[in-house]
Image 1: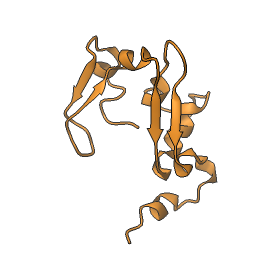
Image 2: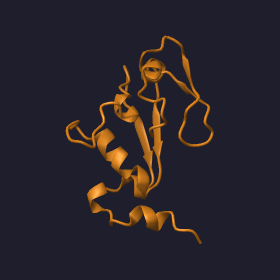
Image 3: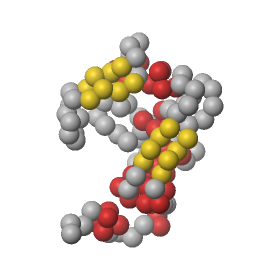
Image 4: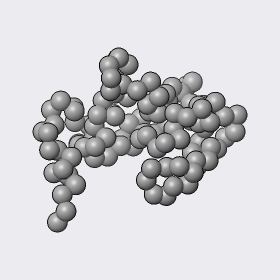
Length: 114
């Protein structure tokens, strides 16, 4: 939900349709994304999040509050504000769970090696 280039000045203010990033913290290091103005002008916007490690980000993105130390102003999903319609969220059970309701080791349980 938060590759390094999302929330950057190039992603939020680029007049181009696509933004290139070469510093993603996860493979592949070079990625492209639609600029924010392109996403916000789309007729249909789908946001997909899976896994317990996304539960906190999903909670912050859909909450009305932007206060607190864990509520980044540049959370990409929170910046999606379509000019027409609303975004549609596709979440698995883990990503949709409340962060407060998760056990402390939920992330470790999901990522356990077999």
